[in-house]
Image (cartoon, rainbow, N blue to C red):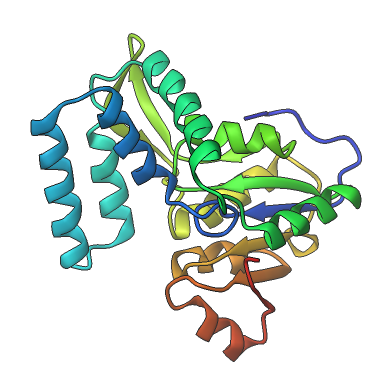
Length: 227
């Protein structure tokens, strides 16, 4: 969201978003909303069928993530950005427990100490910007979709911010600063967040995701309830 370095920052706190900070899977929630305002039954059925098949096959999240973005081919950047704002406003109206209050409190604690929060997500900036704006987060490391003549092509650009790609994105971000990874924090809920958590000095696990709590207890990492 911002390439500006943070004057005087001595630490960053990297937050996964879906199921860590918010109580929805933003990519799929957005896609449902998109099809509700931009009806395309044939494409919607194909999307749902492919996502269901990939889940049934236990496909790697990197594969599912890449296939998800293939359905953006032909959508304009402006259409998606406008729809994302409407989607977020609808979430705030309709989802009472949208934000994980305990983790939002941790984010605010970091801000109060001068430790700069950063969103790190396999989702895409347009759906993350509203939450970032709400909580004063100016850095987003997320999936970048290829754009040609104002339209998405359905391809994504590296790094793919899933699994090891999250750690790669964090390392690249920190390379632009003089801040040590050992001075930084990270929060995640899913086993796919493990590389990011291992990349910093202070990892925290949010309960409720796949496989990560067991690992956290084995290695002695703190486990936080989302509320």
